[in-house]
Length: 118
Image (cartoon, rainbow, N blue to C red; front, side, top):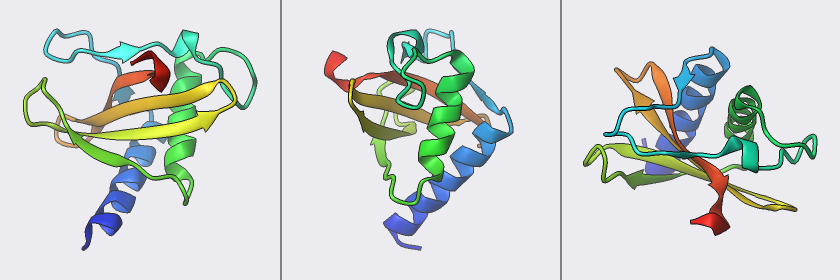
C-alpha cells in the first residue's frame, strides 16, 4: 500500500470512529490542545460550532473524496503520529489536528481553530 492509499484508509477509519461517537478532547497535560470550536463559524450554518457540530464537520470532511490529510509527528506525546486537515471557508481556514487513541479505537482531538490563529 502506498502512502496515498494509506492516508485514504486512515481518513476512512477516523471518520467511522467519529460517526460511532468514539472521540474525545483530552484534558491531560501530556496532550496539549487548542480546541476552540465556539470561536469558529460552521460554513454549513454560518453559526458558531457546537462540540457535536465540530466532530460532525470533521467526519464530513474526512468522508469527502477530495479532502486530503497530512501526517505529522507530535512533540507531546513524543513521536506520536497525528493527522492534519485544513478546510478553507469564507471566514478563514479551519485547522484540525487529530490522532488515534488507545489501540486505535478512539479519535483524540488536539486542534480545532482557524489556522491564522497559530
